[in-house]
Image (tube, rainbow, N blue to C red):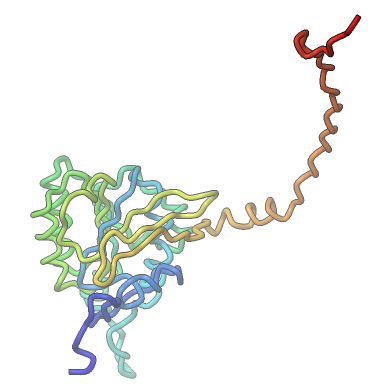
Length: 261
């Protein structure tokens, strides 16, 4: 039974492979040490389309780099890429709140040729597109602000048969609803380019407090580094206030000494 017993007071050990998030502090708090596979992950943000890419880009870039042919081609034969490998290298974006900026995503390490943008007209169509992509073992980033708990449960069931990362973006207020997603995170902007992350739900003990993750884009980091190295001007000395002598206090008439004739 050793290794098969999991205590609720400790992080669970994932049986399926996990994907490093690219943030050591976050991996230390995630069950299995990274983003789970065969599972849906919910990201709750106060404003959609602002923080998701900076949090997910390092892990997605590493996931793409780890993809390759399923087997070594034999000598004398032309290597072929199977349909499953091609699908695993694709990332489907379902209803992103802003038009994807391909040069910016490429700067984050995400190849534009692997991105598929799907814009739907109704929430039902967005859910259908996300479910079909998950069943096809395609990596999915889906913005589903109006999804109901039973619909998230259906996506989680489909995710059990997929090896690709699956992230569902929801508004922060959705944290008050129940969810079948085993992992739920709240992401907020921190100081400068930092991200504040709180694990709302995970397989293990409750997460206390917030994680501060440095998430400076690579193209911006040299500029910020130069600015930080520039010494700030010393503040001008503030002159000391001129001491003011307390006003002389006249004695009360009743306190005067009595004069005798």
